[in-house]
Length: 450
Image (cartoon, rainbow, N blue to C red):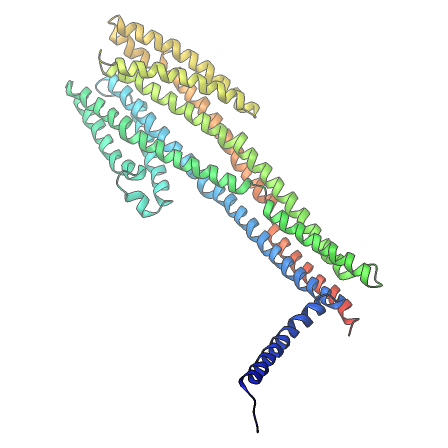
């Protein structure tokens, strides 16, 4: 009688299942046992070294490329655009002060004053066009954005100035109202928009400097892992073979060490240059830009106080506040100056500030005593004891110092880019050499076990 009972069939099935499990585990066990042998360990080293060497080269190369792109952005975008946005503010503020001074002259203003105003407006328009061209269309057309405000309100401002000028030439009192309205538009809309544009570009410049000047800790760690694996592989080979040295692994180790040192030297040099571009360049330029802005705004206050004809106490109060800020900023700039020429410019600016302060005191004394004609003469005419020579010299000194710090910034960014020149290509080639030499060195030892 064939077959068996249910119990026998169950035992048979259980046995088959157990046999299947044993057979399924056999390849895993065999692979594990093989991995523990010398050929298995060498194969593991070969795969790991090739993979890690290539990944390290790719990762380091991408990091260096990102750093180079940040330096390129500093040189061609954020650096120049920060300077352009500050120039927009300077031009607009100077145009307002000049327009107020021209109005005070009454009738037909001096040709030099008119030319200065027109040059300021043209400069503001040109630099505004540069800023617009560098931005996305949405940034330019977004309601309330700095560029939208500057683009749409600047023509309104110039129109108000021209109306005030025409009324003033005809002796109409309404001209003063138009001039105050123009200056109010400048102060409440145009200059705040220019300040916001400058701050945004300054923040982007700082972000690019941080990206370009950071220490590549992850890339260094990856390179150290490669060196550690190579050393471990050579120690293992020395202990388990009769070979003291392995030419392939020695070449791979040399390539990894050279790559690591190259990256360290290049990035540390670049980081130092970027740090100098901040300390001796952009940071000082920012302080000087604030001082120049305070100077221009104070000059506008000085002239508007006279335009208001007895109703300009708010402008005078603002002048006093800005004068205090100006002196504080000049002290900070003098302390931070790392270039002797910049220090001399700042010292000259401080002397000019004192001379301007004396002229302003004389202006206010004449105006408060009812001698409006003398007050206007001291405010707008280039007389020795007036405000014009001191203000012009102060603005020129600040402009010179700002130009020097920007030149330092440009030079340091160029030096940082030079420090990284060729590093990406070199690291990539050394990574390929390391991977190939590692594979060749271990493969020769594996052949001994065939």
